[in-house]
Length: 295
Image 1 (cartoon, rainbow, N blue to C red):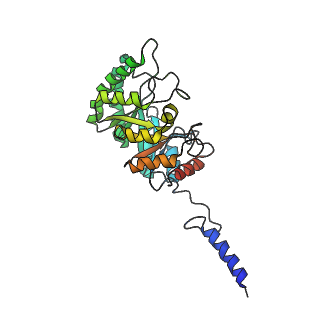
Image 2: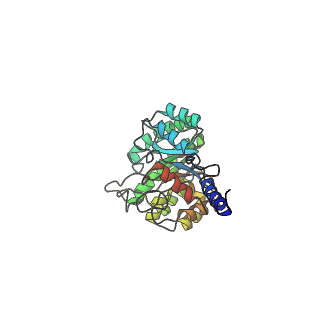
Image 3: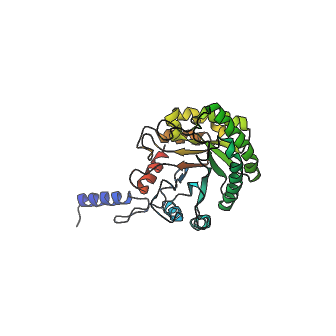
Protein backbone atom coordinates (compact mmCIF):
# COMPACT_ATOMS: atom_id res chain seq x y z
CA UNK A 1 0.00 0.00 0.00
CA UNK A 2 1.50 3.40 -0.99
CA UNK A 3 2.63 5.54 1.94
CA UNK A 4 2.17 9.28 2.33
CA UNK A 5 5.65 10.04 0.91
CA UNK A 6 4.85 8.08 -2.28
CA UNK A 7 1.53 9.91 -2.64
CA UNK A 8 3.16 13.35 -2.30
CA UNK A 9 5.85 12.48 -4.85
CA UNK A 10 3.26 11.27 -7.34
CA UNK A 11 1.17 14.43 -6.81
CA UNK A 12 4.20 16.65 -7.46
CA UNK A 13 4.96 14.79 -10.69
CA UNK A 14 1.38 15.21 -11.89
CA UNK A 15 1.38 18.92 -11.06
CA UNK A 16 4.58 19.47 -13.00
CA UNK A 17 3.15 17.68 -16.02
CA UNK A 18 -0.04 19.73 -15.88
CA UNK A 19 1.98 22.95 -15.80
CA UNK A 20 3.35 22.26 -19.27
CA UNK A 21 0.15 23.68 -20.76
CA UNK A 22 -3.32 24.56 -19.53
CA UNK A 23 -4.61 21.40 -21.21
CA UNK A 24 -1.46 19.26 -21.28
CA UNK A 25 -0.70 15.98 -19.61
CA UNK A 26 2.68 14.31 -19.21
CA UNK A 27 3.89 13.19 -22.63
CA UNK A 28 1.77 15.67 -24.61
CA UNK A 29 3.56 17.79 -27.21
CA UNK A 30 3.64 21.53 -26.67
CA UNK A 31 0.80 23.38 -28.39
CA UNK A 32 2.26 26.28 -30.37
CA UNK A 33 -0.93 27.14 -32.20
CA UNK A 34 -1.76 30.22 -30.10
CA UNK A 35 1.64 31.80 -29.47
CA UNK A 36 0.75 34.62 -31.85
CA UNK A 37 -2.49 35.41 -30.00
CA UNK A 38 -1.21 37.68 -27.25
CA UNK A 39 -3.12 39.19 -24.34
CA UNK A 40 -2.98 42.85 -25.31
CA UNK A 41 -1.31 43.40 -28.69
CA UNK A 42 -2.20 42.17 -32.15
CA UNK A 43 0.99 41.23 -33.97
CA UNK A 44 1.84 40.67 -37.63
CA UNK A 45 5.12 38.98 -38.62
CA UNK A 46 6.86 40.39 -41.67
CA UNK A 47 6.92 37.70 -44.33
CA UNK A 48 10.03 39.08 -46.00
CA UNK A 49 12.05 38.46 -42.82
CA UNK A 50 10.28 35.39 -41.41
CA UNK A 51 10.42 32.05 -43.27
CA UNK A 52 12.64 33.72 -45.88
CA UNK A 53 13.60 30.51 -47.65
CA UNK A 54 10.03 29.19 -47.88
CA UNK A 55 8.37 29.42 -51.30
CA UNK A 56 5.92 29.89 -52.89
CA UNK A 57 5.34 33.03 -50.88
CA UNK A 58 1.80 32.22 -49.74
CA UNK A 59 3.12 29.24 -47.75
CA UNK A 60 4.59 31.76 -45.31
CA UNK A 61 1.05 32.89 -44.53
CA UNK A 62 0.18 29.30 -43.63
CA UNK A 63 3.16 29.13 -41.28
CA UNK A 64 2.10 32.35 -39.56
CA UNK A 65 -1.38 30.94 -39.12
CA UNK A 66 0.01 27.76 -37.54
CA UNK A 67 1.59 29.88 -34.81
CA UNK A 68 -1.72 31.61 -34.15
CA UNK A 69 -1.02 34.98 -35.75
CA UNK A 70 -4.10 36.72 -37.09
CA UNK A 71 -2.23 38.97 -39.55
CA UNK A 72 0.97 39.32 -41.57
CA UNK A 73 2.71 42.15 -43.41
CA UNK A 74 5.04 42.21 -46.39
CA UNK A 75 7.00 44.55 -48.63
CA UNK A 76 6.14 45.14 -52.32
CA UNK A 77 3.11 43.39 -53.76
CA UNK A 78 4.65 43.49 -57.23
CA UNK A 79 5.94 40.11 -58.35
CA UNK A 80 3.74 38.20 -55.91
CA UNK A 81 0.79 35.94 -56.71
CA UNK A 82 -2.01 38.13 -55.36
CA UNK A 83 -4.68 35.52 -56.04
CA UNK A 84 -2.75 32.90 -54.07
CA UNK A 85 -2.19 35.36 -51.22
CA UNK A 86 -5.87 36.27 -51.14
CA UNK A 87 -7.01 32.64 -51.23
CA UNK A 88 -4.57 31.63 -48.49
CA UNK A 89 -5.62 34.51 -46.25
CA UNK A 90 -9.25 33.49 -46.61
CA UNK A 91 -8.46 29.83 -45.96
CA UNK A 92 -6.35 30.60 -42.90
CA UNK A 93 -8.61 33.44 -41.66
CA UNK A 94 -5.64 35.78 -41.55
CA UNK A 95 -5.37 39.48 -42.46
CA UNK A 96 -2.70 41.56 -44.13
CA UNK A 97 -1.96 44.51 -41.87
CA UNK A 98 -0.02 46.52 -44.49
CA UNK A 99 2.24 46.22 -47.50
CA UNK A 100 4.66 48.52 -49.31
CA UNK A 101 3.20 50.50 -52.19
CA UNK A 102 6.29 52.62 -52.96
CA UNK A 103 9.85 51.77 -51.99
CA UNK A 104 13.27 53.40 -51.93
CA UNK A 105 13.67 53.63 -55.69
CA UNK A 106 12.67 55.45 -57.75
CA UNK A 107 12.64 58.17 -55.11
CA UNK A 108 9.50 60.03 -54.14
CA UNK A 109 11.91 62.88 -53.35
CA UNK A 110 12.49 63.42 -57.08
CA UNK A 111 9.64 65.22 -58.91
CA UNK A 112 10.38 63.39 -62.16
CA UNK A 113 8.98 60.26 -60.47
CA UNK A 114 5.70 61.79 -59.31
CA UNK A 115 3.61 60.77 -62.31
CA UNK A 116 4.76 57.20 -61.85
CA UNK A 117 4.06 57.50 -58.12
CA UNK A 118 0.46 58.53 -58.76
CA UNK A 119 -0.06 55.64 -61.18
CA UNK A 120 1.48 53.16 -58.74
CA UNK A 121 -0.62 54.37 -55.82
CA UNK A 122 -3.77 53.98 -57.92
CA UNK A 123 -2.77 50.45 -58.89
CA UNK A 124 -1.71 49.59 -55.34
CA UNK A 125 -5.04 50.77 -53.95
CA UNK A 126 -6.81 48.29 -56.21
CA UNK A 127 -4.55 45.51 -54.93
CA UNK A 128 -5.20 46.66 -51.37
CA UNK A 129 -8.94 46.41 -51.91
CA UNK A 130 -8.49 42.93 -53.35
CA UNK A 131 -6.63 41.93 -50.17
CA UNK A 132 -8.81 43.98 -47.78
CA UNK A 133 -5.83 46.12 -46.73
CA UNK A 134 -6.25 49.63 -45.37
CA UNK A 135 -2.62 50.71 -44.87
CA UNK A 136 0.10 51.05 -47.51
CA UNK A 137 3.69 52.01 -46.76
CA UNK A 138 5.53 54.63 -48.81
CA UNK A 139 9.21 55.54 -48.59
CA UNK A 140 10.81 58.93 -49.23
CA UNK A 141 13.82 57.85 -51.26
CA UNK A 142 17.61 57.95 -51.15
CA UNK A 143 19.68 61.13 -51.29
CA UNK A 144 19.88 62.90 -54.64
CA UNK A 145 23.26 64.34 -55.48
CA UNK A 146 23.24 68.14 -55.39
CA UNK A 147 19.82 68.40 -53.74
CA UNK A 148 19.41 69.61 -50.15
CA UNK A 149 17.42 67.60 -47.59
CA UNK A 150 14.92 70.45 -47.36
CA UNK A 151 14.34 70.35 -51.10
CA UNK A 152 13.96 66.57 -51.11
CA UNK A 153 11.41 66.82 -48.30
CA UNK A 154 9.49 69.46 -50.23
CA UNK A 155 9.39 67.09 -53.19
CA UNK A 156 8.03 64.34 -50.93
CA UNK A 157 5.29 66.72 -49.81
CA UNK A 158 4.38 67.50 -53.41
CA UNK A 159 4.22 63.81 -54.30
CA UNK A 160 2.11 62.90 -51.27
CA UNK A 161 -0.28 65.75 -51.99
CA UNK A 162 -0.89 64.17 -55.38
CA UNK A 163 -1.28 60.68 -53.92
CA UNK A 164 -3.48 61.63 -50.97
CA UNK A 165 -6.74 62.12 -52.94
CA UNK A 166 -6.32 58.66 -54.45
CA UNK A 167 -5.90 57.13 -51.00
CA UNK A 168 -8.89 59.09 -49.72
CA UNK A 169 -11.01 57.89 -52.62
CA UNK A 170 -10.22 54.26 -51.79
CA UNK A 171 -10.42 54.73 -47.99
CA UNK A 172 -6.76 53.75 -47.61
CA UNK A 173 -4.07 55.43 -45.51
CA UNK A 174 -0.57 56.00 -46.85
CA UNK A 175 1.99 55.51 -44.07
CA UNK A 176 5.30 57.32 -44.57
CA UNK A 177 8.24 55.53 -42.95
CA UNK A 178 11.35 57.34 -41.69
CA UNK A 179 14.48 55.17 -41.58
CA UNK A 180 17.77 55.31 -39.70
CA UNK A 181 21.09 56.23 -41.31
CA UNK A 182 23.44 55.10 -38.53
CA UNK A 183 23.04 51.36 -39.16
CA UNK A 184 20.77 50.34 -42.02
CA UNK A 185 20.04 53.10 -44.51
CA UNK A 186 23.00 55.40 -45.01
CA UNK A 187 22.17 57.78 -47.82
CA UNK A 188 18.42 57.84 -47.19
CA UNK A 189 16.79 61.27 -47.15
CA UNK A 190 14.27 60.87 -44.31
CA UNK A 191 14.99 59.77 -40.77
CA UNK A 192 13.47 60.63 -37.40
CA UNK A 193 10.05 61.76 -36.24
CA UNK A 194 10.51 65.53 -36.49
CA UNK A 195 11.01 65.89 -40.27
CA UNK A 196 8.39 63.24 -40.91
CA UNK A 197 5.81 65.14 -38.88
CA UNK A 198 6.64 68.35 -40.72
CA UNK A 199 5.97 66.58 -44.02
CA UNK A 200 2.66 65.15 -42.77
CA UNK A 201 1.52 68.55 -41.51
CA UNK A 202 2.34 70.15 -44.86
CA UNK A 203 0.46 67.42 -46.78
CA UNK A 204 -2.56 67.96 -44.55
CA UNK A 205 -4.48 64.75 -45.26
CA UNK A 206 -6.09 62.44 -42.72
CA UNK A 207 -5.13 59.62 -45.08
CA UNK A 208 -1.39 60.28 -44.88
CA UNK A 209 0.20 59.26 -41.56
CA UNK A 210 3.48 57.97 -40.17
CA UNK A 211 4.66 54.39 -39.99
CA UNK A 212 6.60 54.46 -36.72
CA UNK A 213 9.19 51.71 -37.01
CA UNK A 214 10.43 51.70 -33.42
CA UNK A 215 13.67 49.98 -34.39
CA UNK A 216 14.62 52.86 -36.68
CA UNK A 217 13.40 55.45 -34.20
CA UNK A 218 15.32 53.89 -31.31
CA UNK A 219 18.54 54.21 -33.31
CA UNK A 220 17.75 57.71 -34.53
CA UNK A 221 16.26 59.43 -31.50
CA UNK A 222 15.50 57.06 -28.59
CA UNK A 223 12.96 57.96 -25.88
CA UNK A 224 10.44 55.67 -27.57
CA UNK A 225 7.65 56.05 -25.03
CA UNK A 226 7.99 59.83 -24.99
CA UNK A 227 7.86 60.11 -28.76
CA UNK A 228 4.97 57.64 -28.94
CA UNK A 229 2.95 59.84 -26.58
CA UNK A 230 3.82 63.07 -28.38
CA UNK A 231 3.24 61.75 -31.90
CA UNK A 232 0.39 59.33 -31.26
CA UNK A 233 -2.17 61.19 -33.37
CA UNK A 234 0.17 61.28 -36.36
CA UNK A 235 1.08 57.58 -36.48
CA UNK A 236 -1.18 54.92 -37.98
CA UNK A 237 1.04 51.85 -37.65
CA UNK A 238 3.99 50.59 -35.62
CA UNK A 239 6.74 48.06 -36.21
CA UNK A 240 9.22 46.62 -33.74
CA UNK A 241 12.64 44.98 -33.67
CA UNK A 242 15.28 45.03 -30.97
CA UNK A 243 18.57 46.90 -31.28
CA UNK A 244 21.36 46.09 -31.87
CA UNK A 245 20.84 43.27 -34.34
CA UNK A 246 17.30 43.86 -35.65
CA UNK A 247 16.18 40.62 -34.02
CA UNK A 248 13.30 39.69 -31.75
CA UNK A 249 12.42 41.49 -28.49
CA UNK A 250 14.68 40.53 -25.61
CA UNK A 251 17.85 40.29 -27.69
CA UNK A 252 18.84 43.96 -27.43
CA UNK A 253 18.46 47.11 -25.38
CA UNK A 254 14.76 47.97 -25.79
CA UNK A 255 12.38 46.94 -23.00
CA UNK A 256 9.44 46.21 -25.28
CA UNK A 257 6.92 45.23 -22.56
CA UNK A 258 7.06 48.86 -21.39
CA UNK A 259 6.83 50.20 -24.94
CA UNK A 260 3.88 48.00 -25.93
CA UNK A 261 2.11 48.86 -22.68
CA UNK A 262 2.52 52.54 -23.55
CA UNK A 263 0.81 51.98 -26.91
CA UNK A 264 -1.95 49.95 -25.30
CA UNK A 265 -2.55 52.56 -22.59
CA UNK A 266 -2.89 55.23 -25.28
CA UNK A 267 -5.59 53.18 -26.95
CA UNK A 268 -3.72 51.74 -29.92
CA UNK A 269 -5.50 48.58 -31.07
CA UNK A 270 -4.01 48.21 -34.54
CA UNK A 271 -1.42 45.63 -35.50
CA UNK A 272 2.24 45.76 -34.56
CA UNK A 273 4.50 44.66 -37.41
CA UNK A 274 7.21 42.22 -36.37
CA UNK A 275 9.79 43.45 -38.87
CA UNK A 276 12.79 41.59 -37.55
CA UNK A 277 15.02 38.67 -38.46
CA UNK A 278 14.43 35.70 -36.15
CA UNK A 279 17.74 35.07 -34.41
CA UNK A 280 17.22 31.30 -34.33
CA UNK A 281 13.83 30.02 -35.43
CA UNK A 282 10.46 31.57 -36.19
CA UNK A 283 8.99 29.65 -33.26
CA UNK A 284 11.48 31.22 -30.85
CA UNK A 285 10.88 34.63 -32.44
CA UNK A 286 7.13 34.22 -31.90
CA UNK A 287 7.70 33.23 -28.28
CA UNK A 288 9.80 36.35 -27.78
CA UNK A 289 7.03 38.54 -29.20
CA UNK A 290 4.57 36.83 -26.87
CA UNK A 291 6.78 37.55 -23.86
CA UNK A 292 7.07 41.20 -24.87
CA UNK A 293 3.28 41.50 -24.50
CA UNK A 294 3.30 40.49 -20.83
CA UNK A 295 3.09 43.20 -18.20
